[in-house]
Amino acid sequence: MEYEVVIGLEVHVQVRTKSKIFTSVGVGFGCEPNTLTDPVVLGFPGALPVINKEAVEKSVKVGMLLQSVIPEVTKWDRKNYFYPDSPKNYQISQFDQPICEGGKVEIELPGSARNIMGEHKWIQLTRAHLEEDVGKLNHYDGDSLVDYNRAGTPLLEIVTDPVLHTPDEASAYLNALRNLMIYGDISDCDMEKGQMRCDANISIRPVGQEELGVKVEIKNMNSISGVRNGLAYEIERQIQTVKAGGAIHQETRGWDAAKNVTYHMRFKEESHDYRYFPDPDLMPVRIDDAWRERVAKTIPERPFDRQRRYYDDFGLPFTVTSVLIPDPELCTFFEEATKICAKPQQAANWLVNNLLGELGNAGLAISESKVTPSHIAELVELIDEGSISNNIAKEQVFGPMFESGDMPAAIVEAKGLKQSNDTGELEAFCQEVIDANPGPVAEIQGGNEKAINFLKGQVMKASRGKANPALVDKVLKELIDKKS
Image (tube, rainbow, N blue to C red; front, side, top):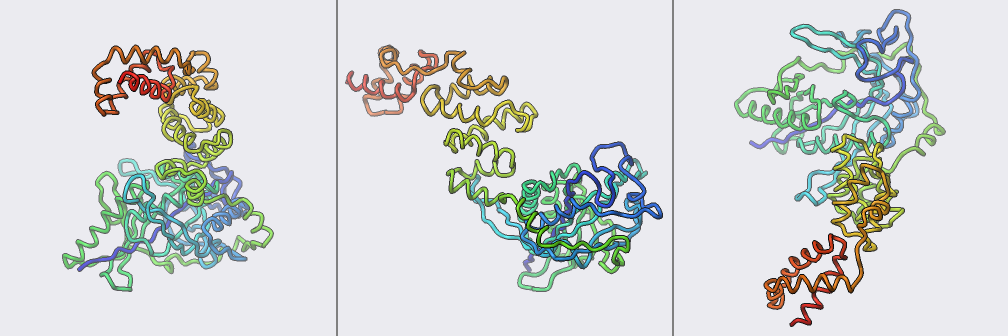
């Protein structure tokens, strides 16, 4: 019997704000444990929450990015459970009136080849709701310590419908969602810092069956590759269990990345186990038309819309757009360079193939680079007008430009790198090379046109790279034709 896999993802995204969702205490990562707390965070008696307007507004923005329905009124509920990471023994969340209803995310599946854009499809969402994050348990040799610094950080839980069917689809969804959150300036989505976390619900069913199978939840997948690997293992575990005559139990399992296995944590709770009820300390929030219109004006171009524009307007290949699109700063850099030199393909190649490599080696972000869009534009123009060759630009100009921040034209002038277009001098170099290499000349005369590349290399060497390659090719052919 063949089985169909059904996957639903619950992604928690920390909303970047200056303070926590229900108090003025700041948010941060890597601070001394339990320093970002106050009576509200710790749930002291009499401490009352106050809603962070920025967290609500950014959640509305997320809803618009996800093309969700933003209800007129949203409210807060208490989710009751007892665990050390929740100091109040309940979490302020949203149950029946979330801030975002429905929605969809466009994803791109891997193409048939590295340089071909893959299939695009839409993943339907159930909802997104705003809540407070919980603390973090740190385990040491059998002891557990709790750090409440993270507790109270604004957290948006984005839930898909059960419409994913493979680990690749799940991975593509997480990448697409992460890019949307970065483009919208919602979160950095750094999974190592817990800014984006994913739980997966997985079930299997015989192909053709409409009823969903028994659902298993997987937690502790701390990277996109971890989600892919965890899903792949759990899918195989469930299929092999059923084939062997066993039963799948509704449970929560953890992911052990070191052992590459899932393991039982606890049996899965249902929503009624949390005894949700409206939070008596927080009023519902009304989102009026004026507020919506204000937020709508801040919605950026979505990543895949930008990618399609780069294909259509600039003629960029998938291999280049797939590097540019995930980084909005890099895209802005590219578009500014293109406005100056009007050579989008050349500018993009220098960014992707050269600048990113240098930045990576130096451990720098694009915002820290001494190379600006004007540098790239000027370098492209110097090559295009024949002042320097592409090789000279790569080998003798780009490195010094990256290190010093000097403009490429100034480096070319200071080093005397400008290509020579002096036909008389070039003819002398070419004739000298032809006379010294009768073998390759004879091959060319015999019909082997590729043999001219050796002669071109010798001329470039004799001219110390200053000869114009196109002119070298032309002069060599003319002189060899005369010799024939």
